[in-house]
Length: 392
Image (cartoon, rainbow, N blue to C red):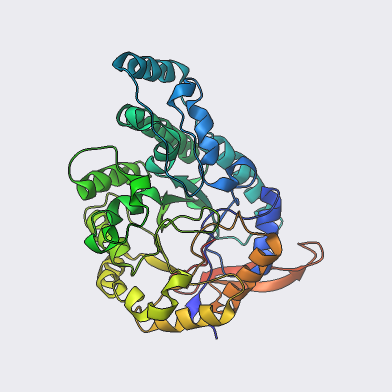
């Protein structure tokens, strides 16, 4: 059963280095990728956890972050707040996202020259919104001031990435997770459930939706027009758990409608999670997508659905068939990054994605590109329609 078109890797992959990520993922899903990330290996495998260190110039500013637990807050005097912000400004922030991307792109180019990565596949760089870094790791009292400081640092890293990597080879993915909680907190049905929203309270006053839309659009505006751009929507994956099990995609769809209608950049790809918890009401869960389809078609946006679930081929097929009734074209995806999985399970997930999807790049088999495996490479760069995804 091959209904969807292609596979899209969302981010982290449970392998030791970038070379292994490119080789093994291409072997597991031949001809399925229009874009491929470096797997966020090493210190990046736990999403933004490694970013806590960039605030180390003023240790009292840091939280005691624990997975799936409320963040403990402390009180600070005005003098302490001023001292902390001035110390951070003086020390400066280097996110390291640019260094990692430029280093990984060199591996990408080498393997493309060797035929491991087909021509026409872009190198995907995944970057978090500001909220996904400062909310878990910075004491709440500092958040209003730290927001702008970190945002400037993140934008500098993005600028360097775009200056160093050819635009025709580059795709930027913006990761939103904590941001989804902000929006969910405006949903009365979610609030009634006592669903952990207290962990993700915004640090600003006023209209949550407008504030979020503004800061996401500031981020989007930093991406050059000839660089591809995508959005990864997320409900968290700490210890393989969501902070909230959504009843439907209503919040994800509404948020997209807000920021896409006045967006400074085309959204080339858009990912939606489809959790295991939706099995009993999958039609209702997917139904809001009908309201998003016209906007996606207007923008020429590829839709990727996180329907691929580890060791659950029957559930995956059920979700694919349900999605086919709602949207005319889509791609397959896992819900979130796979860096916290074991490689054999992740590899099986990729192979499942290949089973339920069609190639997006014409390939011919070529042996000995990947030791002990059969690799494939592009023959003519042809792409069949719009790509679709396997989010990992």
